[in-house]
Image 1: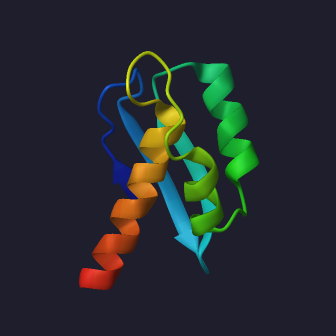
Image 2: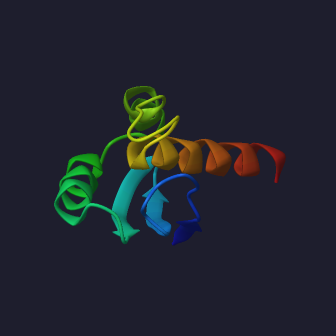
Image 3: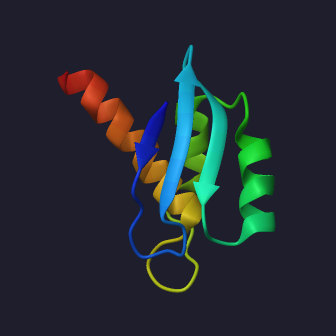
Length: 84
């Protein structure tokens, strides 16, 4: 299980797993509950790169959003795997 602390959004944490390059068990702590539950369900089983391409750059109340922060979490995971 990975945990990412987003910035600039209402959510305080994003928890998720990646198994065989597919996203599983996404949950957000705080934020817009209904929207984030919907996003979590839609992301289940989606490949990491596809999720990044769909979510990166979405804006809410500023320069980022919960979907954008999740894309950043996935990018950080990829960078850590590449450098680790």
